[in-house]
View 1 (cartoon, rainbow, N blue to C red):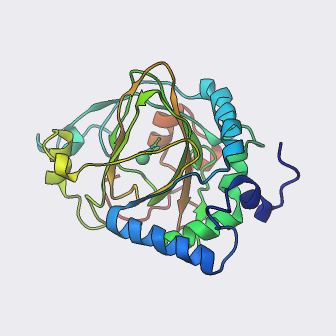
View 2 (view 1 turned 90 degrees about the vertical axis):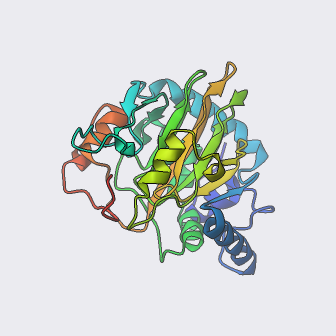
View 3 (view 1 turned 30 degrees about the horizontal axis):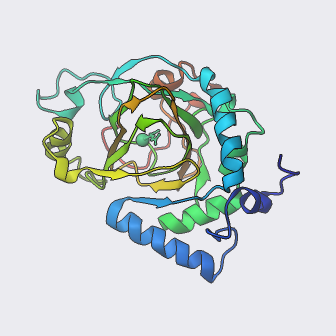
Length: 287
Ligand SMILES: O=C(O)CCC(=O)C(=O)O
Ligand SMILES: [Fe+2]
């Protein structure tokens, strides 16, 4: 399908670089970076529509669909922070609100080492572009062999409930659209490094804060850049017969980021030797 891939070629072969000239530094890439930064500053979210070449969208979809049965499909009871229940917290605290997590992740090591999305994830050119977009000197793939790159599988009748991400920024590509539902909803910047903003988080969970909720239309092959550590977000219930699949490419400005053992077990049902050490964290928030 793709010839031998030198790193820079990945972007040129996979991305519709006519529409999105992001492969090399220069004025054209700068213009896209400026747009992404504007949208991230205003909204915490930017969608580059038609990022993947149309001819490769079916490859991405088929590779995802082939991997989807390997998702860890435990239906969990979670809170927005994905932390353990803490009965010492006051009754109105958002961490005490539980939800059903109906989505399931395929871990990176089960996606197929030669899948298109693996090449995209490790592409230096994509990382340079992402770093420029998020204003970091560079970004790193996670040191986590499971969570760095995942396929998020949301089956009909299920949703991915409100949550915050562990990493500051996430890049994602829907690889298979649902027939209906499965909408990405988010509340940009609802919390910050120093402020959990518990009252508004609770209001969103209670459905009392529609004014804070935005919706992104994500079509297969679009690239979404999303500031998910500080934005509460979810995928609404998928309707119709088809699963919703999205590839989640997690990067961090800090090297060595690995998920906590508890979260890793929750998401993937297992640990690897990489999950033994002291986790590198980017802030002191609840999760
Ligand atoms: O599948 C998506 O579009 C969002 C997934 C997400 O929020 C996550 O994996 O943390
Ligand atoms: Fe997320």
